[in-house]
Amino acid sequence: MTRSMIVGNWKMNGDGAAIGEATATAAGLGDANARVALCPPSTLVHRLAEALKGTKVEVGGQDCWVDATGAFTGDVAAEMLAEAGASLVILGHSERRTARGETDALVAAKVGAALRAGLEPIVCVGETLEERKAGRALEVVTGQVRASLPAELAGKAFAVAYEPVWAIGTGLTPTTPEIEEVHRAIRETLTTQFGDQGARVPILYGGSVKPSNAAEILHAAEVGGALVGGASLKAADFLGIIRAA
Image (tube, rainbow, N blue to C red; front, side):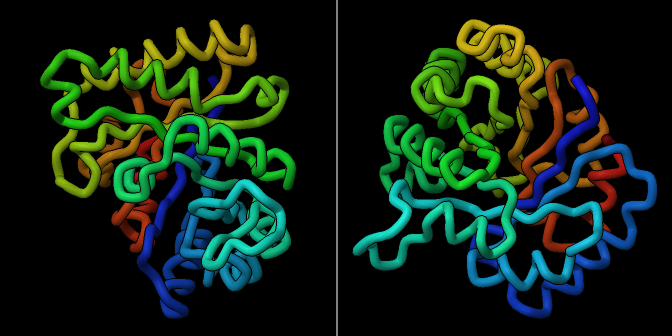
């Protein structure tokens, strides 16, 4: 494992004024030992990329469609994100899997689109509370990993983000042993799929990550970083997480 990867997902939050928080994050990084990225709404990708040019903070998208062009009203192509200045993209977030009905097959197709455009995919997986209570967390998560990551990822940079659905935006987090158990299962699955490369892929944790719990989470076994939601909107909070890495 190398340095931690800390990615901020702004979701459907942020306007022009939020760019100031992003530049404050970049200015406050100092010698922080983490790879840092922010994924704003698509309306801000270009403006944020321009504002952060020359800094250590990368910019990504929150989703992309599988086609490069066409009659897909409201969708954003991976190529459009790349042209706007993005270098990576979040795919398969639980909010899209549950609220938009995205399947593993669709997520895998979007991964292919991201690679086609030269974007680094961050593929999200995670179980619901009902699935965890039924003792199916590992089965569900490893199944999502296998079905959402196409073979064409071999030799390409990508990350996996484990986000238990029941912990996103709720203030709840799994225990450290629970996080480690799932991350170990993901690592085993990645190694089976991608060999030596699978042993090096960053596995991020997401779900109510904040400055107060970041150090414990980021130093858990097989946790290679964090996918941060609301706390990434404020430079002070996001920097607190980054410095905990």
